[in-house]
Length: 99
Image (cartoon, rainbow, N blue to C red; front, top):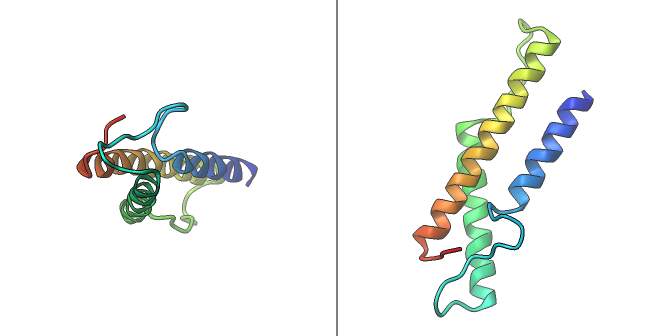
């Protein structure tokens, strides 16, 4: 149970970063801070929805052992976070932003 909480917290923390490395910002010619914040929020929400559809938070499988369920959940969280990051970056680049 503790592992699940830790993994979930890490996944949420990574997702909250919005895909940018520390100190890295998205830039677009002519875009003010409000526009960048709005586009970032839209891309983040879209990426989260898409990643959750691809890698849903599923209920545990009773046929699996406890360790097997934890491993499967950790892999799903990793896959979801990676997909979300890629989708966020693609969305921002699609809107004309660069880092």
